[in-house]
Length: 194
Image (cartoon, rainbow, N blue to C red; front, side):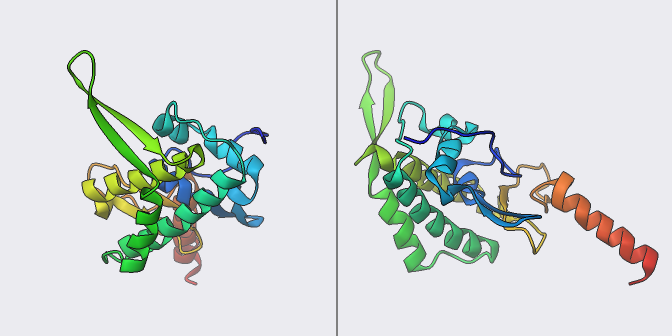
């Protein structure tokens, strides 16, 4: 089983789980990158804070089955994020793709021994766990504030974020990265008149 081989190389982490899965693909000075191109990258992602915060005790093996299920889920989320960016409803095909992932898990509600309600996630197989949690997280995001799911305003960037700013005007995946590049470009254009 592959183990985490180093720090998370992604430029944007800490987003909600569904968007964190989308952000396993990015573009840097070396070109397009994909953390999930290998089981070692999968191990890095599975050990990241957003994944551990959502999946809790539902540990998934860092193997090919888990990776394949996450790639399937990421493809569905990419299509849904594109629809959200256009402020359009999901197409039946994109909804069906996410619903297929969700069909492999469920939330079991019970009354606990202390008389309080308890919830437990059950999945068909542990390898579905991270994919199911990411798909379920998407449902929470679109139920809460779908207009806050955004792609970075930099056309050359493929990252997504959930805008939690008070006035909802965040445009960049990162002010330190894409935001500063845009400001520098505007400054250059003003100074040179180009």
